[in-house]
Length: 419
Image (cartoon, rainbow, N blue to C red; front, top):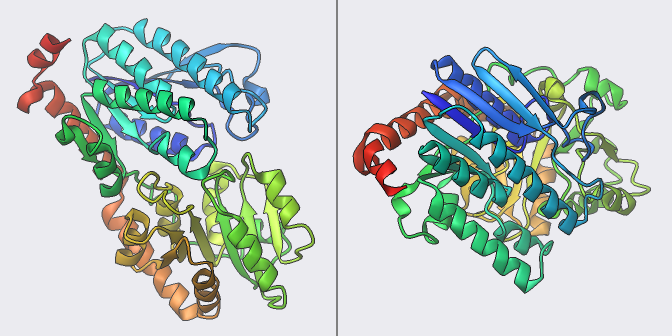
């Protein structure tokens, strides 16, 4: 089967969704599919094209499973300029559509969203190839952006909602990461049955439990302290202030150290708020090659989402933390996917994102309970091995592609008649 993939990031880009799509493509390649990827030049870490990739607007190369076409992301160095970012995503999506239309005949189109504009690019490519379109939704936009207050203009919100609705309408199948996201999307569309739950997976061979006494911890000047880490994007969806406030409240607990590993539009602002805290370190985002060491270095990992975002976003780093055998403290909407995964797996604790007092209390209890942390880490690892394997996720996509092309109401002949 010839599969064409449109996605905003792909390794060696450091975005978490890039790692997810790279692993999925590699697994599909193992199943003898011919996979062709259209993505951006690496830019996520610094919000500009990495120095070793500059000089050309388009780069193409063959792989063992197909090919990769990398396009300039047209990104702006001004991370907080939403207009510039929207224009960049729009231009990148247009280039992706042109590159996809120019490809040789494909059997199925797989597109990652966000950005919303890439969904429409995928639709145009699907029209050209007379192929089914599968929309992989990582986060629900603009809902997440509206909930965080990063978008407030009613006209812009209406325009983005219309774009979202059109993307869902034109997709022949939509994959969501959780039941929460599935229900959220299904309630917005005419045919809810086309929404399927296929979670992101984690490579349990690449991410595994290891000693916390490693080079990463040593580089931070840490030894046997209890290290509490948030690793990920520093944007408007993540209430990092709760970590800063907790660190300030625990300054007398010298054995507890907080590490913020990441980049994002709020990094400078957050560092200013944490100024003077000797028990808090901000460090640059690490490469995927160092991910296992980074995860292993922490005693407790944090998952943070602002209230109201639990049904719109499922951070993929949760699965990597489970695979690394480290306990989790999640501050999220209770009853949503992250809360359920943490609770059912036994991998740690989750508290309501609106209860900062309980967050601090639970964090202290975990920090003081090494036996409980060890047990939670082992439970999380077991859950990752049994439920989040790359092979099982690739199999789910394989079955979905086959169904769209040859089975049920979406038989290939019906599909092409619709177009």
